[in-house]
Image (cartoon, rainbow, N blue to C red; front, side):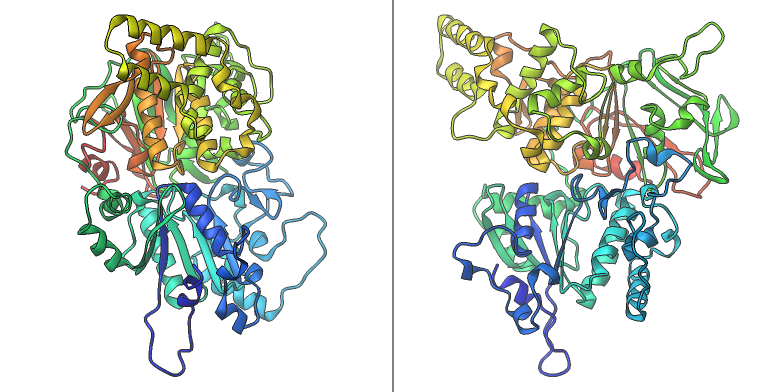
Length: 622
């Protein structure tokens, strides 16, 4: 690492031989490893010995790493604030309100640092104005300058945050997961923007990638890091790929690079998907209607953000969005960043104020009472929905213990006292116990790992009965889960925080589970385990070489959480094929803003990772 930043330096182009610029990326399946690596480059963390980390070029130009290196991370902690003011507003539904507050700062305010009330007047110098013009042009922000930051889409917010970092004229820009959560079209656009920035070498660009992101063609140097924070390989991209392509089977570096090489086109020829579904798996029969939208159209003044089209309904052209979701259905909402997915979802969760006036029914009832029918209350909606998203993550109280964070699924609000009965306590314990290895990594085997070993060594019925009794005694007092009462949500890694919120969304067996980019940023192994748990609960321990392995808990008949039931509906929003559950069977893809065409809809024959062409069909590429 001591050589990495000097090698990425611009050098003197006025004389001497021309040196090919180096464009570095750090690739790892672990979000913690990626973030920690970039933080080390930025001068964070204690270095032992101190002389092992040096910045020769910065020393030559007399600049401190603190000012010359800028880090931009795209997660709930680092991405939700603008100069101390929340980008998304003071509360979850604030971003959908038409009335603007004094603290709803525009992109121009954000870039120029005017994000405080009653701030001292500061006129921009000519140099600052020129820099602002350059940055706005580089990142194509011209049309967004007067827009409140809270109204920006995911991709637009990322461009604005990169622009903010560029305003400081850093020598090095570290981007942590710039492609995470972007739709394929926005991802391609962002890659071109970053390629342009990197080619100018002002600043030098180093970014982190997940293996499933693939490696952009313009990146020519790689650092491969495993989930134990060990650097497995580094150097020229082609040489790193060639070295491990010819290496022995089963190496960690090789598996990471194989996924990276396949990138978004990754697929595998196996009997079952990673979460236990066959290539051809029929959808469940639909039950009663959970969500019903009949001609929904959301507008702010003259600007229509959802429903600016006509749909064919019963052989008749009708305006607005016509769409329904039923029990048993597993449906995905897709579309480019800014197409209205979040707005559509906010109508379903009733976070959007226009839910009251639009033709929407939730669980067969409107928000406002009608003739002979009572309206549905917000508390009833929250009780019947489980919701996890980056917005929920940004607003979730970080001081709760891990147990209370999951138990809050049974409360009216995260900080309210949960209403627990024995069944709900057992379900929370089941979630904690299943993911104990991820949430509380120790050298000691977890209770489930001990049970697995015990059953593997047991051959007789009496030995299995002894294992069952031992498991019952160990879980009766919950001694193995004491850590969940002591560890705070804030102490968890970003990946594990997302995991806890995912478990919170599903633990209470709600009528509707909503996963809006819920698994974005979760480590690859944890994500696959979470997807398997979503569909099969404690019944299936893993899928190995296309075969489902029954869990020890299932063998003992002690299953408490069995996964999604046929009475539940599932709603997914994701821009990454790898984050989509294998149970998804219906989809709707919203048009890009201003297109005026109706949404496309369709059905899947089976899981996406075994039917990769369906992903291109969803996005209109075939």
